[in-house]
Amino acid sequence: MRSIIQSSAFVAFVVGTALAGAPMPASSADQAGINPHGYKLPTGVYRCELNRSVNVREVSADMSSAVVQFDKKEYRMHAVGARSGALRYEDPKSGLVWLVISTKSMLLDTKHGRQLANECRT
Image 1 (cartoon, rainbow, N blue to C red):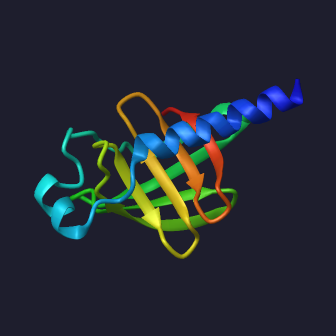
Image 2: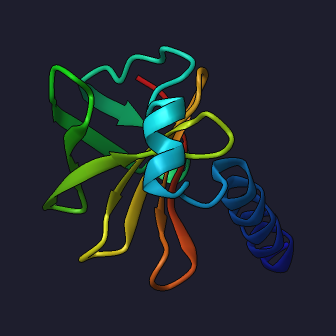
């Protein structure tokens, strides 16, 4: 049973990474915009699977940055363009990526190749 849970977590990570796409080069991101679908990033606590939570404390007016709290740490993340059109916020120093699509969000640790929080909703 544990291997099934671990396998499904890995599959979810791979799917999430594919959904996010690689960051677009700056010129492409400028043309497409960082938020082509007009998603809003609400502040507040996002409840996630496995009793995890992510707190989006602050979002800049132009949505170019956000302050995200996870596991008693705070990260200032900057928006980057994603080929999929999802909102993608990154903190290059920690390797964290916060992905937002219309119905859910997820927090990824790209340095260690794992999901930290999945199926997050406000």
